[in-house]
Length: 247
Image (cartoon, rainbow, N blue to C red; front, side, top):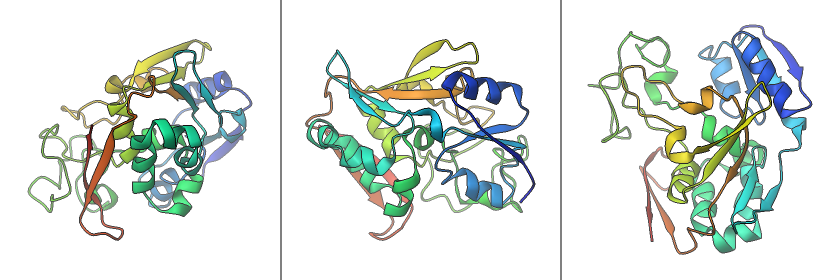
């Protein structure tokens, strides 16, 4: 693991400023994805910004009848919330379908959305990967790809985003609230938050322009009757093959 500097921030705007002015900086909350990648030196951030003290850990009703879910709400707390279980069963089930209980206890709502899109070849630094080294090629194409993208892929990348929660949020037409270094907030439709790989195999779209995620806002219990069906290679810890939502 390469050395890095570390700081805590006391406001979302300060976090966004630190992220935009410090070279190769990353936000850290639960760290469930970032720390693994840092140990493997796939992520080589020179600076980590701890956002755990920003108070963004509340689930609040909105005037429109939805929920405003703070960026730092842990996945376990979100899945267990009475309002989420009652009105957004799709979201609760999707959260419980992902990862282990230990990881859900640490993982945050924003971190879940912002985790790297990846496949097994991404972790193997001996294999070419356009996500690690743009232009080096995609080892998954022509390799073992049973759990990778069938649609929405490109010649640059066929990895899939690992978040079951992101699928549920898309089905619920959620909105992502972000803040920039100038303290201005933006609302980004979840449908526009992630982008397809295209020629660059980048993970995020508009989130990069406003780096600090504040919250995710759901519509008026739009998913009350929806269900999530997750298909895995096995009923144990097998990699997710697909997550499907249905009314």
